[in-house]
Length: 496
Ligand code: UDP
Image 1 (cartoon, protein in one colour):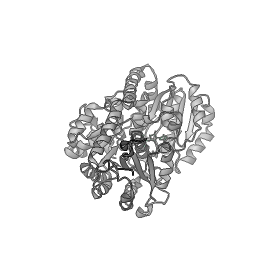
Image 2: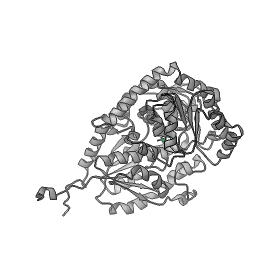
Image 3: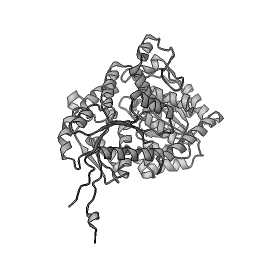
Image 4: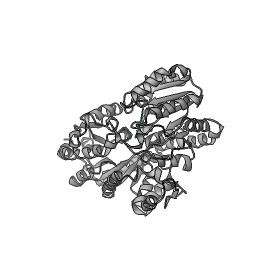
């Protein structure tokens, strides 16, 4: 007979999650959802129909997770109706309009919130959705900000706001090296490397984000305590709060092949075929080259990368992101030059979405040519793979500095200038075949051995952090406890 005690049950705490509809934001947010649900938290995740289809496979096995779909208000900013994700925008210069359109989801969510049961005890919002603070205020719940960014970059952004560094760099020439103030390591940048970050449109959006962040309860980061401890400490000082929880690398929540393979989108290559190909290669011999989910480099630049991979004389997997403006030219070149025929014994070309985490975690992969998106960076680190760094925009220049100068686990291809969306990204070839090939050679040769040793050590620390009792695992538990402590909804509720 059940005791009277067992008749009283507790409803799980309920968190409301808002990802930004871009792969580099929504994949780690979905992985955060999965981790929270594994720790007994009920999750409601708000997104649009097309994005729900992409996220669903990652979350389908978690009964505590529900996805609520709200149509994307594209018309509010004159965007095409099917532009529900950064990667379906005809040009990335439309991102500010896209982000403004997301704010029209606010009133829908305010309508929905009272119907959610039990009442959500917090909102976890992507950093780029400052309007979610209104919902938090209206329903009197704490807002937490999720950053899939490094403490290194966030500390730089805090310094940019709080010091005269911005004025100093504006007064400098394009190539003059200026030291970043209040940084634990002597890191220098040029104006050319900052043109994206200093774009007035993004500075304004950054100000709105900072305002919402300063009214928020705390920060969740896709990083781990052992990766950048001094930057993390300085960041806490700069923002005047120690409510910062590093709970990553979140991609390590995908344990089996299936989970890794269906992460984020339907892969353009059969997972079995890909694994068998990798199984046939020597350990640490393969270069994996991929420039993220939204890069818009030109067809000649894509071709230059293909030629560099061929010239490296190493086995490789080359991911070509297909866009309307480049697909035809690249396909014609591949066919006319019989590229795939030439490299058939040692190269694999993936057109479209690659199962990146699955590939990176294979022991045959020995080098990663990356655009240094933060997710790719931390995925490379947690797979123990040294990197060839080719930053394109946003925080990527900083991630390169962290990889090459601080962690010393990669070699730069020598990019001198950041790309602005819709401006420089449409200009021909910026990185030459020789630069890419030479950087690959350094990473894959004896010179790369020390980098390999260091990145392997970091990978071991990352894995330990995510295991039961590890720092990220504990931080997640502490975060849940703290939010539950704050919330009304966690009061015992009788189910009869
Ligand atoms: N990704 C993937 N396959 C692809 C392209 C991207 O799995 O073909 C994933 C990658 O593993 C990462 C995310 O998409 O988790 C991209 O985020 P990142 O911050 O690296 O770059 P972004 O795409 O935002 O520039």
